[in-house]
Length: 176
Picture 1 (tube, rainbow, N blue to C red):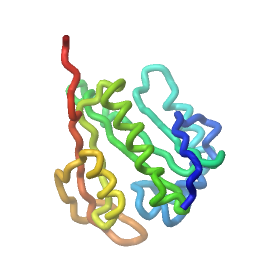
Picture 2 (picture 1 turned 30 degrees about the vertical axis):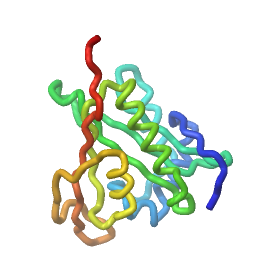
Picture 3 (picture 1 turned 60 degrees about the horizontal axis):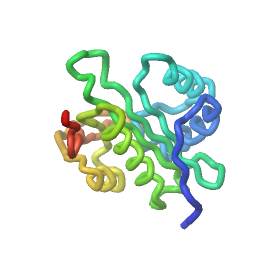
């Protein structure tokens, strides 16, 4: 286990190559709702777009020893006015950093942002039903199972089940 400190910070376009490498790792990709053959150019465009005025996306990275070991984000569910209080969560952890607190650090940062700064009442996510490690992590942060979706996504030539999980703000802000 690597005991070096984990640093969480906002992702920047300069992280594009490291993001492409992380998302391109076949073992990481197998647990994501992403597609193969990503590139630094694709990630540079995404990260640049997230910084545009009016965007509410939050994209974070985890670094350890100067290397990118994980990423996570909160993203709007769409343009609907009545769902502005909801964000979708995505997270990935490098193969050699899994089980070492990286996911926990990223989840803590996202939930802190959502609860204290982002005006987020509800966080939603999709996770493959066979990803026990991720499901356990989400449960530790208050996410609850909300639904099962047979044949939800095509993964490596096979349709697989996913779970919908959600988390409501544990102590929504009130007016004094």
